Image 1 (spheres, rainbow, N blue to C red):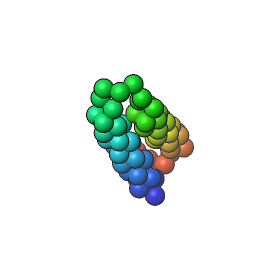
Image 2: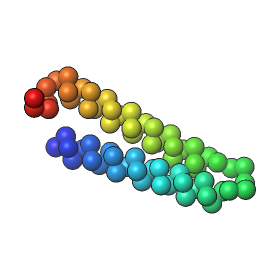
Image 3: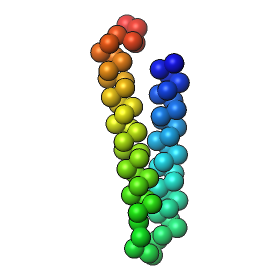
Length: 65
């Protein structure tokens, strides 16, 4: 269960990073970068959530020794 959730969040992080790259390349000469910033913000939030999930799970003893 935890592995599946972690893999889903990791996939979301990668997709968000790719989305930010695509929007950055589309708006190369323009000043509107709100889509890029929004995608990178979602990526950072998901990565922090994944990190906290792993830390809390390790502290609760979910991972075997």
